[in-house]
Amino acid sequence: MTELKIIGMTCASCVVHVKEALEKIPGVHRADVSYASGKAELKVDEGASREQMQAAVEALGYRAAFEDAMVQARPGLLDKARGWLSSTDAGKEGDKLHVAVIGSGGAAMAAALKAVEGGARVTLIERGIIGGTCVNVGCVPSKIMIRAAHVAHLRRESPFDAGLSAMTPTVLRERLLAQQQDRVAELRHAKYESILESTPAISVLRGTARFQDGHTLSVKLAEGGEHIVAFDRCLVATGASAAVPPIPGLKDTPYWTSDQALASDTIPKRLAVIGASVVAVELAQALA
Image 1 (cartoon, rainbow, N blue to C red):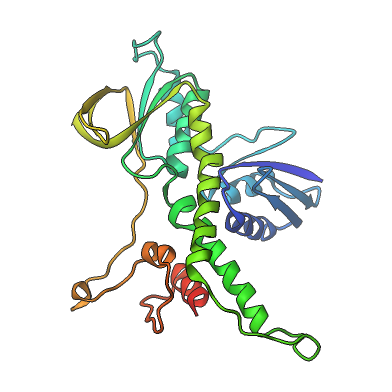
Image 2 (cartoon, rainbow, N blue to C red; image 1 turned 90 degrees about the vertical axis):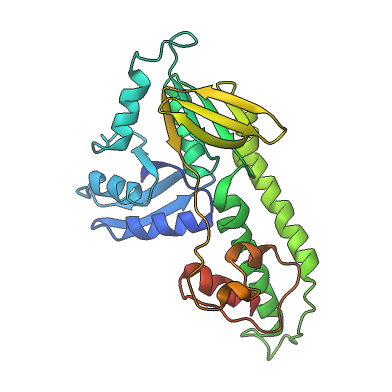
C-alpha cells in the first residue's frame, strides 16, 4: 500500500474529490482517503506514476507528498513563496520576514502556517468570522443540512416500507439550525481558532484592512481605533461571496443567497432556485 500525505482537506466533500481524481489515474486501483488523518492509502501498480498522483491532488488546490519520498513540486507560486521566506530583506524583529495575511479562511490559514514554518512572523487580519467560507457558510453547514434532509426523507419513504411503517416527520427547523450552528462553531474552533491561539508567531487583528502603500496596511479595528501594519509580503485571501445576477426586478424581491438559505430558521412553503450548480441543487434538495 502506498501512502500519500495530503494537506488542505477540510471536509468529506474534499475526500470525494481527491478519491475521484486519484482513481482516474492509470494504475491506481483504489484510493482510501481520510481528511481527518490527512492522507490517502493507495493500491497501485508498480509502474503507476507518482508524479501524476501528486499533480492530480495539487490540481484540486491541496498539497501532496509521498510518505517514503518527497516528490518535487512544479515551479510556481509555492516556489516564489519559499524564496520570499528565505530572503534577507526583512531586517525587522531579528531578521524575520513579516507576512501580512488579509482573511482567515482555508487559503489564508494554510499560507500563514506555511510562512511560520519557514521562519516568518505573520499578522492575520479578519473583519468578520474566523474560518472563511467552508466551515462557516459552505461545506460544513450545507452537509449537515442535507444530511438532516436525508434522514427526514428516509423516515418518510425508504426501500423497506413494506416491513417498516413510514411516518412523515415533524421538521423543527429552528432546532436543526441550532444543532447545525453548534457543530459549525465546534469545527471552527478546532480547525482555526485553537490553531491561531496556539501559534505565537501569528498575531490576529480583528478589523478592516486597507493599503496605505506597497508595504503598509492601516487596520480599522473592530474594537475601535487604528493599527498600522508594516509588512514585507502581503497575501490578500479575502475569499468568496455569493454572486447576485443582474436580473430585472430582483433587487426589489426578498431573495436569498446560499448564506441566508443556510441560516434561515424557517422553511419556505415555496422556493424558486435560480441556477443549477452544486450549491443550487444541494440546497434545493435539502429544503425540498
